[in-house]
Length: 351
Image (cartoon, helix red, strand yellow):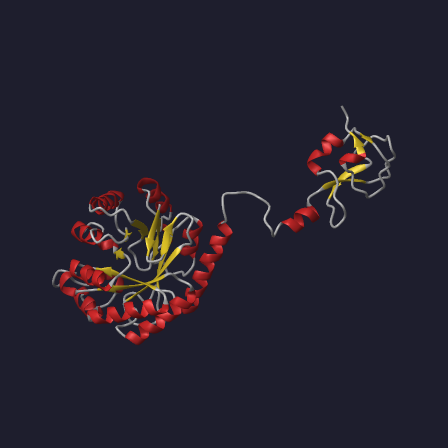
């Protein structure tokens, strides 16, 4: 199955759809975001993704600290600091459209989803932590746009239920992302085989939302294993303050990651096995053929002593090596000189 996002498709037979997650890593600065968008566009990625947080609709009051951040700040304050005015996202959307990059955004509540719909977003990316938020899933699904669903920290039944909710809302444009809700994510939990499970069980395209520290290992492995979509966080500098900078990729890594993904796609090729254009020269040059290794007179028997299978180089080829056992014991129908190719017309096949 293929899912269309704007003018591009995600699914079998399509290039890997690459989403570069800026999230809040532009530090609420529009000009920083513009710079990052420009770099992402130049890298060859397909889409850029942001997040819109509304602290009052995200966490219960006094929700406490997030342990992995190791900072003396409650999550409510952290989210509040990341909030931006809605109009800034309209400016980001317009700029992405101007440079030819797909703008995506994660809605964290129904009002945000409505705002994104009015803005004209091409698809909705739903965060792992809303995998069981069926009210939001249903609200987003009814808009009829593709739903990209991360599944971090969920189990298979959570995913089954979420897919069911989206489908019951009349939406079958679903992309499922394996994800590890750990920052950075450890390789031992990555479980890329889940992508194949999703595609087998649900029939929708699957991919990876990667939070691991290394810029390349998981994205490359995922694409090699058939990921239809790859998402990776991006920052201008990992040393910046903020929850998502430390495990994000920097500009030079972004370019290398996208380039590597495209090369892996080329290397994967098709399920056909045939001689490629790049192999034809060496097939002709080095695939063995039958040659005389001594002068052979008309009527002589072709034996292992006067013939052998050799690589022809640029000399004229003879009978292919795979027919050598068939040729042995046959009579020469004409004189064959030393180092000359033995051809079908040079022999009388044995009966």
